[in-house]
Length: 336
Image (tube, rainbow, N blue to C red; front, top):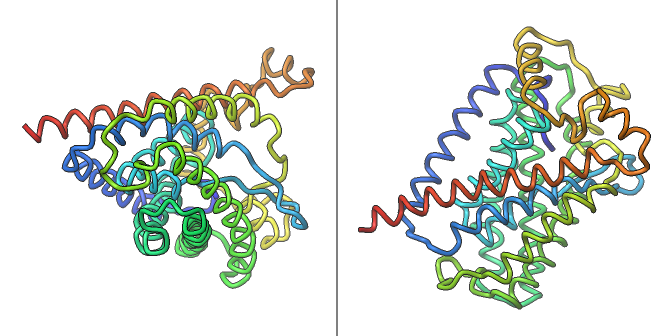
């Protein structure tokens, strides 16, 4: 559900940049006030895990489309809404700058759509009401399935509204919604199942992580497992990702009646596309055209995808981990 620049106007993109930036600042302020010494350092490793998980596109039967996890609800349950928002923002920034996944203009939209709804709506008003701090597999299943699906549907509806407000495409609202919501409902169900499975594991190994601000010791074992899972997923499992277009790309193609949806380009979009092309050193999670790309194309294994998975996982680990470390130190200083 990563939006590209082509369907977003500069006004809508700019407004969502401001909104997402304000939410990052607000979240950072709240983190320093919580004085948490355990969950804040986990931002790096859990962010890396979510980045790797997002690389795994799974096919949606009968549609010719695919989906991937958002990870927002999982991060929120384990880290709290403020750490989750900044962590997922770190993931999306790395994806945009290093891999050209999602547009520069649309970055604010992507952060808002994928991070705001699970962190500040689905978690407090759906998941927490259903599951609370319970470690019961049944309650975790009900909370995860309901909240993950709701968060993803709210995000997909926001994509439609942002596209409509941009006014640079002629996509009919009702038809766009009718394609977007069902396909993202299916993706949300898968996300809910995966979230439930991870939370059941955490409930057995580090149950204190499921309760806000109660963990007193660093969960080294669980942290190590998430780190290993992130590297294995990004470096190996990503090789088996579905080649089908994701839910948004598929919906755009269906609504427009074209195999590949490409609205008319504008100067701002062309400028930002050129800038992103210069910044992204592994565009579309692969090597740029050249000797390396030629060698990869002859290889039975997609080395570019594997390298991208490892580079991205480590980049998010450093980025989100550094954010957590800085905010943790500020929190300790303000406590004195």
